[in-house]
Amino acid sequence: MPTLHSMSKEDNLTTSGYLEQQVLIAMPGMVDGNFAGSVTLLCQHNDHGAIGITINRLSVFSLGDILAQLHIECTDDSILQMKVLEGGPVAPDRGFVIHSPKEGYESSMTVGPDIMVTTSRDVLAAVAEGNGPDKYIVALGYAGWGGGQLEGELRENAWLTVMADSDIVFDMPLPKRFDGALGRLGIKIDRLHSQGGHA
Image (cartoon, one colour):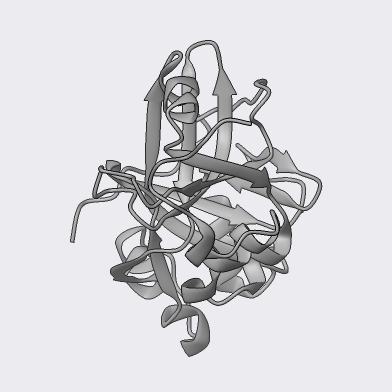
């Protein structure tokens, strides 16, 4: 298991770009194996680049593994056995908690009306005590793009975008998130081709 970087208040996330509050859906022609078939919540977008967390891939770790490494005690088996997601190929030892709105955590950033992202360990301590956010998922690692890179990939039809909503992020079973996100656009997977067109 990778050694986790301590989740702390130094990871100040900010969002300001026009792609904020979006989910990226990988098109069938996606050549990067890190993202084929992925659904990625865009957490930050500005002139310097973008950061996203993939929300439909399981890691090999449980939340119990993460809590143990951070020396956070928990006796609730349902919390300990919760699966942790593979958030992306960058910094796989960095943890992120995507959660329903709840104020008071050290480094929370609002992604949408019903979605926040936190990197501080206090949210996991609250979860372990049974008084964390109503809904949450934990991911290791993230996806990152340099300035202008994501915009270029969008022009090349590597991704579709749809407004993020809490149902896709928290409630939908992982295997259904790709089709569910596409469904928000009124598209079915068998209608997609690897070569997108321009209207």
